[in-house]
Amino acid sequence: MIILVINSGSSSIKYQLFNMEEEIVVAKGGIQRIGIANSFLEHETHEGKETRIDQDIPDHAAGIRLMMDVLLDEEYGVINDIDEIDAVGHRVLHGGEKFTESIIIDEEVVKTIEEYCDLGPLHNPHNLTGIRVCKKLMPDKPQVAVFDTSFHTTMPEKAYLYALPYEYYEKYKVKRYGFHGTSHRYVSRRCAQLMNRPYEELKIISCHLGNGASIAAVANGKCVDTSMGLTPLEGLVMGTRCGDIDPAIIKFIMEKEGLTIEEMDKIMNKKSGLLGISGISNDSRDVSEAAKNGNYRAKLALELFDYRIVKYIGAYMAAMGGVDAIVFTAGIGENQFETRANIIEQLGFLGIKLDPEANKVRGEEKEISTADSTVKVFVIPTNEELMIARDTLALI
Ligand code: ADP
Image (cartoon, rainbow, N blue to C red):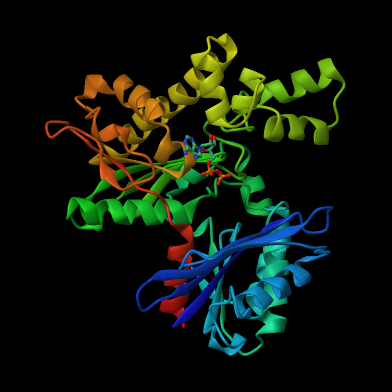
């Protein structure tokens, strides 16, 4: 069974081609800068053959056609015919309240994803473009949508409702949806496997710390709370997003600075977080480097980042009445051991202890807590693409 996984963004498309018999990625790559100058495709095969094609890629259709050419290429290709692809799995950001699970895409599903474009305006339209182009190229092959929000649809009302007039929930479905669901689902399930215990019996806190960052509380195999909200802006301090703030700040700064709603929105989404506090970068590596060189604001940015996570872990332990395991994943969670050490140290009063030697790990699955730690702590590299491929296989 050969499954193509597509993540179609505003100016990029990432792809992975899976052979599901062995669950291996036979080829993967990305198309960048679609519709802008200097567009290119990067591609590598399981055997380690790599290529880069620099050419004008005016739109997503051209990008996906180019991807197909490379997949069929004599030298860098991995299939002989497009027909060898059995199905396509698409990452879709927003599945609203309706999509509680992954689903085979038909006209009705497309229509609903379209309706949710106002909830996910930066992603859903581009996810849809990917779906439409693939449907055209492979009309007979099943296409599956895997939503970032589905995993969180098990949250109880008390966790997903905002304390705004109820009519906004009724009229506009204003509620906490949460994101990174495929990642939280993958690492929390994997955590249960590594612990050799039933997923349904565990309380797990999953920390997805990348440029975008969120935490999920998973109790008895179900998400019961998560830090992102109606949009990915809420919750943790992120690369460029502010996360939780007093909502009254928005009006206050807009009035002081004479800003429009769009400008304020951009400040909170693109100019805040690690970048906003440090004034240096949204990339935690640059911020860490500056902090090590004594830059005060860089140090402060990292402190804020870690402190917010500590608070959320504390809150989710209270929400679940305890925790069996904490998992770190994504760029920062998998690689920045100082961040992990600093967070767990602040939770030391609960008897949670890291093994400093084990914590040196980068990008590998590992238990990093000591044998006598009251809570197990793991690094588990996320694999959203594999999860999408597995869902696609299960549905077809
Ligand atoms: P995205 O949310 O864009 O998918 P990633 O999960 O790739 O982001 O995470 C990006 C963040 O992870 C950046 O802050 C980056 O500094 C950090 N990161 C990625 N790789 C490493 C690494 N090898 N060492 C330290 N930090 C890393």
